[in-house]
Image (cartoon, rainbow, N blue to C red; front, side):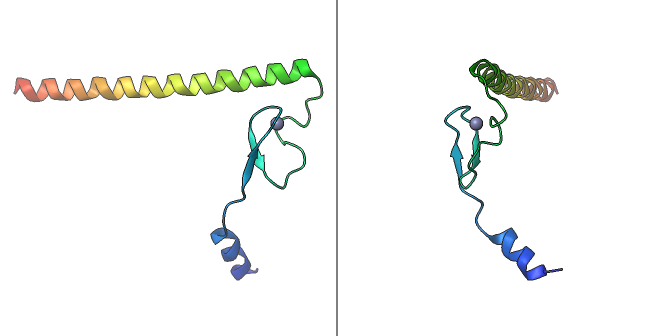
Length: 85
Ligand SMILES: [Zn+2]
C-alpha cells in the first residue's frame, strides 16, 4: 500500500467546485457533466428536480428552527428551575 501517496491525498487541498448552471448544485470543477442532473434530459424533469432540492432546503431550515426552539425551551426551563430554588 502506498501510505505516502494516501497521506499526500489526505492533506492536499480539496477539489474546487463549481455551481451547475442547470440545477445550481455544486460539483467538481473538472467534471464535464454535473453528476446531479446529467441524467435529466427534459425541462420538466429538471424543474421537478429543482423543486425537490428547494423543498429539501426548506425542510432543513425548518428542522434547524425546531432545534433552536427546543434548545430555547430547555434553556428557559433550566432558568426557571434555578430561580425556583
Ligand atoms: Zn446540475
